[in-house]
Image (cartoon, rainbow, N blue to C red):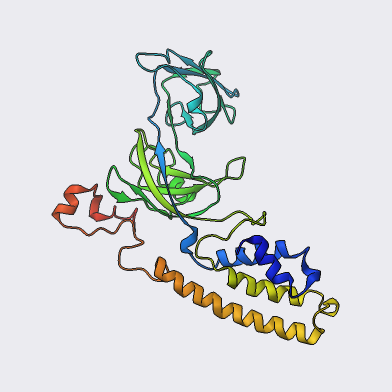
Length: 324
């Protein structure tokens, strides 16, 4: 069934519920989406990290969000351009990361999201020096609910997913560690509300990090919209029928109030049983209710000389206190 057919099947039990039914169906399916890690909401993607930029020097003015590039066009590098938008600019390690919001390729200037305010010597408001531009924060795409796993293919290990900004600001406030990401942490949403993450350490070289994630599907809007794969429409219809019968039962032209409410309760109990059946069947598509040893522990490794020779291995096979 599509969205229109689901609504039609449910409103047949109470024609007075036509106006409310689109919102009800979306409420029901969102409750279902939140119940478990449904296979139909599982998606794959990849994050490609850009090469760091540090050609020439940069001039920053205290309190200004404009950065002037000097000798930034050298050799095969054609200078600052629009591809730098969204990346992070730093002038030394005591400078916090500033997100680039605009680039003027002709004037070779950057516009930062915030006015520059890194430490300056006394009575100095303009500073020129070496800089670097990397991408620390990444938008994985629309409707990402959360990441299930991300893999560093260059180094041959999974990234740790349960890091936080609090942890990293304690462990590496300067973000001095760079190049090969070993962890990912949620970062505040961008101005459009997109889910953002920080890769740590920040990659300096072009790399690709494949990932799997669960999505939050958008609302059903058009009559032809369909539910995600393996989310059974008959289960949704069963609960929608219950909600229709509970709506103003005294005004239902087809049933007296007692019958309507009794049927609604029956349909709800049937819905709960069908929902459990659907969840059990979903486990056959992708097991999520239980894990085996090492499955959800990025720092767990099979070990052995061959494995260790082929992968990046931290001290103690897990990095000591950091991983523990």
